[in-house]
Image (cartoon, rainbow, N blue to C red; front, side, top):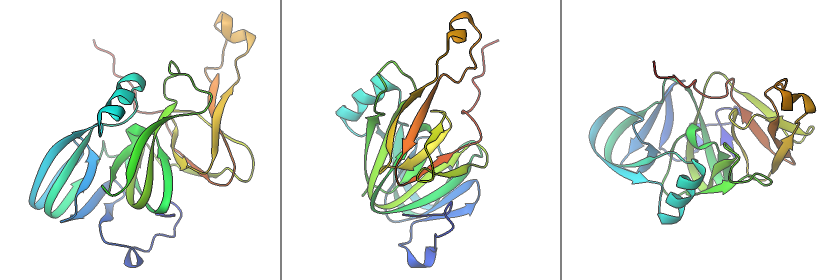
Amino acid sequence: MRSSIFGNLDAQQLPAGFALENGKMLRVQLPHEVLAKQGSMVAFQGQMDFDYEGSGGIGKLFKKAVTGEGASLMRVRGEGLLYLADNADDIHLFFLENEGLTVNGRNLLAFQPQLTWDIQRVQGAGVAAGGLFNTTVTGTGWVAVTTHGTPVLLDAARMPTYADGQSAVCWSTALQVGVNRTMKVGALIGRGSGEAMQLAFRGQGFVLVQASEGAPVVSAS
């Protein structure tokens, strides 16, 4: 796997398609199709059609409805240059080479259509546990993910690694992933830390963690 976050992404040695216009904007070169987060287009040059892709089939639609995971997608066809962004979040590129990447659905910005994807449950997490379903993308091609702030890249092979389920942006599919619960008696009487559950990662691979638990929810006045 090659990525801008690893520092080993040499665009001249990889198929054309995705490039960073800047740290917060993705440039996609068509005529090839691309699947992107619905509403992420900020500009384009050339001729393009935008079609609602939904969740990619009945099975995925059902999983999305049950779990809340998976961004609504659009399929873009045409010729020219497409520019994508999401709330001015930082963008990071991955080029998969017959391998997989697990991504938090709300951090998935765009990927090439030859890649396959599905919504999967984290081992040990029940349906009622929010934020513990994620989107797995596999195959060969480009994937773009977003992070809220500058992320940290953790090597899970060095030692057991834990991350908040909303802060973990993406990770290697080769990792063993489970749930770590740290509930204490004090939490039952309102004296908990607020950090009672984390994702636990073990094995050979990486975890990309953003500097946020996600965009704040604005309450209605």
